Amino acid sequence: MKTLFSIGHGYAGRALEAVLGPEWRVLGSSRRPGAAPVLWPDGAAAALAEATHLISWVPPDDAGDPVLPHLADLPAPRLCWVGYASASSVYGDTGGAWIDETAPDAPGTPRGHRRLAAEEAWAAWSGARGLPCARLRIAGIYGPGRSVFDALREGRAKRVVKPGQVFNRIHVEDLARITAAAAARHLDGPLILADDDPAPLSEVTAYAATLAGLPCPPEEPWDIAPLSPMARSFYAENKRLRSCRIGPELGVSLKYPDYRAGLAAILAAGG
Image: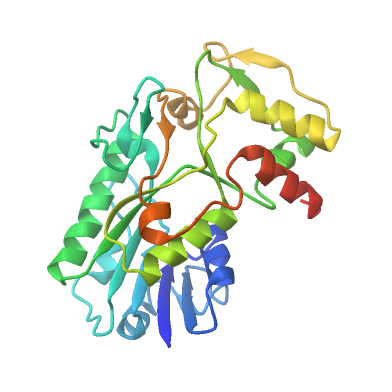
């Protein structure tokens, strides 16, 4: 029996749990009593002592990674793999050029710098224990209950236009399948998790509105659109992502290689 300790076991963690086989046991953690098998951080020591695999979904804050201080020198006698859910912001802006895992790390935003620092902290913690650490560099996650359909129905959707700007995405089921394969194969180092069709958000929003028969919001120029600082930081970078490891090393092909396939599946399932 393989035991996964999933820290910050939320949307992506539950999707991963759903695709793991019967040989897996999942110990998800939450700070809310009763929300997951492991109460964080009180139950961390007991869960880590049982874990063969560990993944943290928790993003860094201004003080750094909030998880590692609680693990520190806790014993992990069975642990053989560590995964850290990072983000593609560690690559910075490439002016729209295609990049893969061989590209240098070049964060250009505070968010990207925090992510890279957290990756390096996790790699150091794992390396000190002689363990592989997969740095999961994840594009924008979407899926049932968390897609542009929800934003359109709730009146939150925007069609912000910045000429030449594109984003990659990843359906949560593909994210889960790739992560499961990385854990099973003890993958080490950077891994890009992204679809094959980077596209402008305005295009995706318009397609979803047409597909669902919902009103399509008007286009808004990026320079005058009312965006939060976090949202605006996403538009500060423009890159096209692809993985050179998912197929050759993990043997995984995307079920939803573009947003059209992903959105159609969500709508067909009632999402």
